[in-house]
Amino acid sequence: MFKTIYEYEDFAQSTTNEDGSRVYVNASGVAYPSATTVLSVLSRDAIAAWRKRVGDEEANKVSRKATTRGTKIHSLTEAYLKNEDLDEAYVTTKASMLDIEMFKKFKFVLDAIGDIHCQELALYSDHLRMAGRVDCIAEFEGRRAVIDFKTANKAKKKDQISSYFMQAAAYAIMYEERTGIPVPWLVILIAVEDDNPQVFIERRDDWTKELLRTRDYFENGYWS
Image: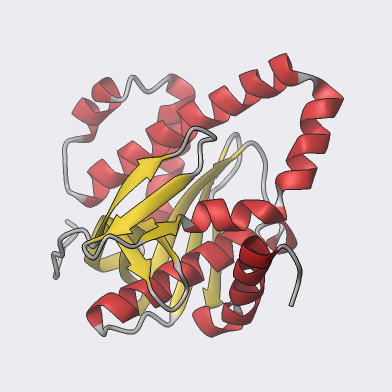
């Protein structure tokens, strides 16, 4: 059984622009881009080159498949952490046999999660000038961490997921700014198709400088 020790109301509401980017508006009416939108500058050129290489039709097909699978695994993870009935969740999410097998392996790493502070909480930071919705903040192997859930076709190397760490660092900073509760650790959990899940653990402060550098590039169009 997972235990939620804190419950917070969302600190921002989101809207989606025509180009697919997301903006969060706080209670004061200030709009901030999502962390995902800001960090997309890191992969923009690579994605454009990939779409050009494989063609729009194939690229759209692959993207839809990845998005659908990611949504299902994420929904199952949220249900599991809320102690909901998984058999019912499999039906509700229309999970395929592959989805279910991926999630069953993923459950083993989820069991390292202890007391939960929040799930799916919208946050923002005046300092960072960005916002977002964090997957989970909880104790992981006894350490308070932002925990982000990902899916992948194949195992990732650390140098391939810098944006994941920066995104998690942004959420940690947002959460501390809004609540006064520090979150020193970042945990990235990846459900991998036909392979074992991956666990990456990093210190928040090791990624703050690169996060701010990327934020500045997003805002100003050049690296500081």
